[in-house]
Image (cartoon, rainbow, N blue to C red; front, side, top):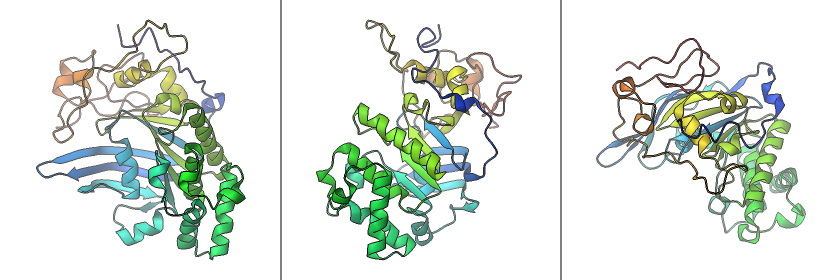
Length: 359
C-alpha cells in the first residue's frame, strides 16, 4: 500500500475556489534559471542547490516546500546573496525585474536588499537589534534607500506599523524588541520588510517560532498585504498545511532539486511524486484515529557533498525500481503545468513520464 493512501486524500485546510480560476498573464518579478549554490568546506563541497529554476509573477505567492536541509532556504538566501561562509553561486541566473543579480558585487547588492527584495525571517527575536527601538529599525532602511529625513522615516515607520495591524502603534514605535510579544515582533519584521515597498518578499518559515493561533494571523496578514500591494512572495516552509489556501503555486524540493511543481489546488488533488505524497501523509488530520500511527518518511536525505547519480529519493521510496537505481529522472511529464521528476509516478499522469537525465 502506498504511504498514507488510506490517510491523506485531501488537504485538511480548504483551498479557496479562486485558485481554480484562470489568472490573467502577469509580469514575472523573479526568474531563477538553473541556479547552483555550493558551499565550500575544508575537505569537500556541498551542492546545496543544484539546478533550480522558478518564476514568480507580480501579486503571486509561490510556496517552496521540503524537509529541513533540502535547500529551500539556501535558494531564498541565494536571491539575496546572503550565503554562509564558503557559500557561492556556482552557476545560473537570478533575475529580478529583468536584472541579473548574480554578477552584482556587495556594494550593488546593498541597494537591492531591503529595497527591491526583503526577507521575513523565522525568528523575529534574533533578526531584530535588541539595542534599538523598533521604530528606529524600520526607519533606518527608509533613510538609507529612500533618502528620507529622520521625521519622514519615522512617519513611514508609523505608517507601516499601522499597515501590519500593530496595536497602539504611536506608543509601540518607541518600544524595544524585548517589550513585545512574539507575534508583535513578527509584525515589526514584516513592517521592516514592507517599508521600502519591495518587488519581492521572501518569507522564510515566518511562523515557525510562533504559537499556532498567532501563526494563522501572521499568514493571513502576509496574504492580505500581498494582495493589497501587488508584491511577489516566496513562501518557504516545511509544512504543506501552511501552503494550502495561501500559495498560488507550489514547488516541492528534495535534496537540492525541484521534484514536483503545480498549482496548489492541483498538487493537493493529484500529486505525482512519491515524496510529495509522503509529505501529505505525514500531516495530522482532524479525523485521524488516535491510535493510528502518524506516517513518517523512512531513512535520511542523501549527503549533498557526494550527491548520487541516480534518483535522490530512491533509497526512501517504496516504489523504486531498477531504473531509479540506475538513472536520475529529469523534471518533466505530460503536462507542462504540472512537471515531476519520477519514473514511477503516483496516480494517473499525462501522456509521457520523465526521462533519465544525461550523465
